[in-house]
Length: 281
Ligand code: MBD
Ligand code: FE
Image (cartoon, rainbow, N blue to C red; front, top):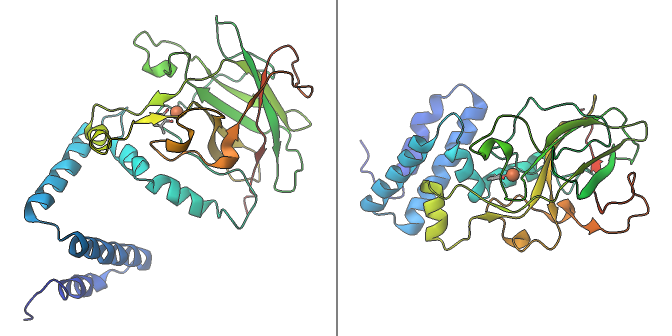
């Protein structure tokens, strides 16, 4: 029997786990243990801080419900989710629109709408969203599905309203033979992450504002291409450079144009955004 000390304990743990048959499980957990042990040594974590940390994680778990995923939020406010996407997208190696955070308000059954339709119900549309879906070589992809959802003028998604009954500010469109999509909507408003749980308390303790810049979510699909989950962000939003969940990257920022001569529906300001899909292979 070895006398354990702050240095040799790491090797002892990794030795015992070496029975793991699944090679990827072994690689991931070994690395996790090495980094966690290094972290504990670096900050000289005290027993009280370990208890506090475990209580925090317990609380994160107990805050999860069918409609609220506090652990997902935790990974987002720490930048982990975006880090994983930047690796999966192989950014820097391959052309393609970057992935951005799905968020907690995605609903899979949305109305299929005709190109040019409004998604704002009784409200007056203010703006035309449009753009082209292409492959990495700028070839248009027709019949690609473009799903969108956004907040309203109060910064709320339909499902967050107390009187929620039917789909609002959501829709699915199919691109035309030039790969274009277009529809009418309103400008979304910026939005705060849920601040009443343990993750919100952490964010407050760090004196972070908890806001997300105004954004519109998209899921774009075409046969033979990887599904793209992303969002576009409005230029000039005050929170663009300090998104609490790190969803914004430069190429996802779009600007409203007042007199857009390329608009497929003249008469309203436009927000153009083109999507580039990565091939499936
Ligand atoms: C949102 O609207 C959102 O997109 C994310 C990721 C988190 C909280 C609110
Ligand atoms: Fe959102």
